[in-house]
Image 1 (cartoon, one colour):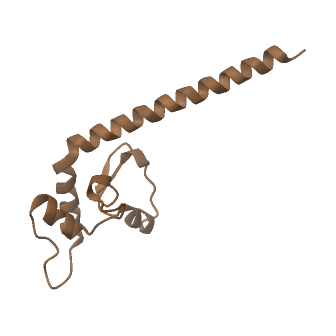
Image 2 (cartoon, rainbow, N blue to C red; image 1 turned 135 degrees about the vertical axis):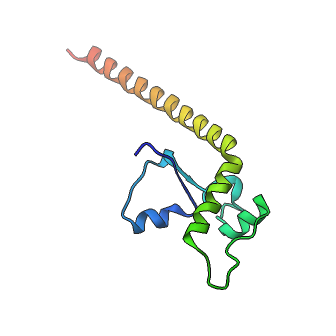
Image 3 (cartoon, rainbow, N blue to C red; image 1 turned 30 degrees about the vertical axis):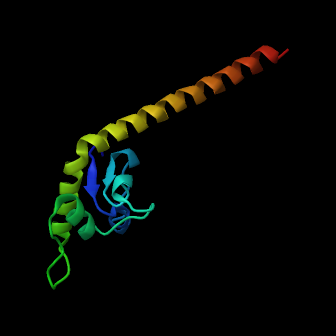
Length: 117
């Protein structure tokens, strides 16, 4: 449960397996903004070719799930430092917002108590 999951278009896989995983622990190369074009996900084959200079899914039999998993992991490792920094920053923003929201609720509760007869 406390592990990062890495893959490409993981939503489909997780749904097929009837699994849920915390969003902050998912690294989906199909949803990583720097890998997207005009807010659309790209094919794993194209990403690997462009980012790593490797050819995958080239066989006439289609593609292998093992090759796909390895390719997604290679992509992740290629940008891991930047990606994880962005995740930490996003988590910090959410925590800051959450604290502000809680403080505002607590302040409203205090005002309600003062106004009671």
